[in-house]
Image (cartoon, rainbow, N blue to C red; front, side):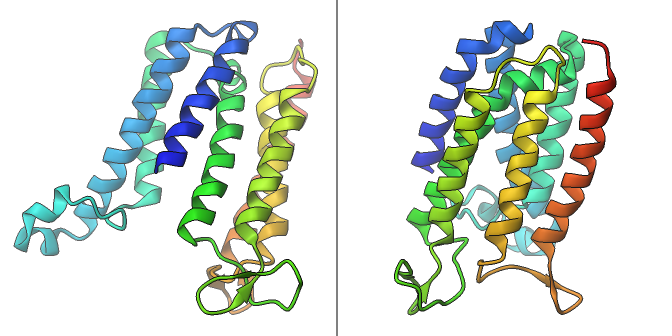
Length: 226
């Protein structure tokens, strides 16, 4: 958790340095980030509680437990998206410009997530005999957390030093495409992937779907007038 807080601080600091080039004020950048983070945390907890209401009726104090497992990621994302959308609408923020302004924050946060996975031993890899395997959960495994962190660092470098494109959204879509592509590669070595249809990794299917949508949006934005 500490790593994620540090990543959030660094990401916002870097995003602030370039926010004006995207036509977004620093206050709006900070506000939409903090409101979304709060919504993500609260929304994830409430969504989990609502889905498991009988258990919490018997033990209501569990709602305020510090147990991180009492959390629904999809519910958290849904609530965070709603809050971000409402704030953006009220402040009349342009969607693509806002996403471009937040891209450095997203990129740094991804590095923090990779490091937090490494620290917690989550998102672990399959067993391997390779020399760079790490001992985790009573086996030598692919260091997928390190793969994830290194990929995120590389992606951050690519988007940070990318020349500014006059078409809004290209910076964010570039980041999204690179992140989805790296997920396709890294998921092949994960030992905790969710399998569907007995042979497909759910995370890779999602990444492929994301890439299709991203490339469609790329084409649309490139056709737009600068």
